[in-house]
Image 1: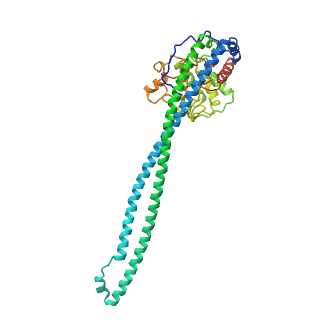
Image 2: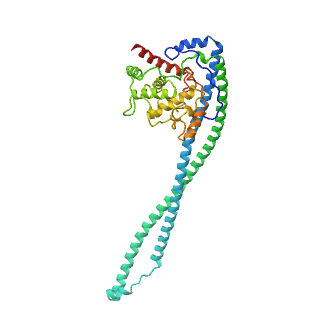
Image 3: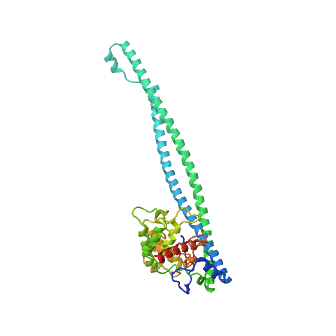
Length: 401
């Protein structure tokens, strides 16, 4: 998710009435209400298109930033590799010079050297015997020198080959590094352009949001994101158990624990934790696929390579609830949260995280669940209906007990 310094707008009265279940009438009834007023329908259509365009721009920025991070990592790795290859080249050059010196010295000793045999004559006795042994000694010395020189030459040739290969590899790595740096510069330019496009899209969406409020488009949708949970943990877990889902959660983590966290974290931020639980059912297939304690698809987008990772279930649910609060409440600020903004969603630095939370570009764009979709949280136009249908099933189950 991306949040940058963008225009903020005043909070208007969003809900004119309430309903028994705390959720809107079935989607069909809502649609009839919207369709009955062409001005309302057009205002919503324009708003959804503008918000979708803004989210698309934001997702492109997220995807490019992920690519930027990958490139920066590769550049750092290649720089290290080049440094290692440069050192290897220097070491091999020293070794090559050392071997050359040894070979030259041995060649000189073999062809021009004269050993001293003065003592050998006295020991062996007799000049004939001495000459014979001297020749034999010279033969053995020559054979030993030749054997050693052959080994040194093999070492010399191997060192030359290794030096050549290392230099060639260093040149290839340098070319790769230069190409990656050029790609990074291009990406930086694209990011700046995309940020401008996103700012323009957000500004347009904010204008249309005020127009939709002016014609009462939001009052046609009564499924508030904020408010108390109306279902208990036992009711939520009872419904879940009746559906035959197969959870795939870390050892020791249960659906009952998750449900309790949704209710508690929702209460802390005045967000409907029971509906957030329903949202997670849609996002994870009933908790069958919830990697890294991410129960709501945060960070995933059509062009993104990965989602946000959370170390604990509470961290994942807290980030989800805080993001719902930011979507629903245009007056939301980090200073008004019960808990500091999630360091895993916004930034590890508390000051930066607070600024990112406060300047979230879609702040207040979805005060009701019916406003979700069309880029708000998900690109699927039917996203809100899927979440609300799950919640309706939960409330029907609870009322039947």
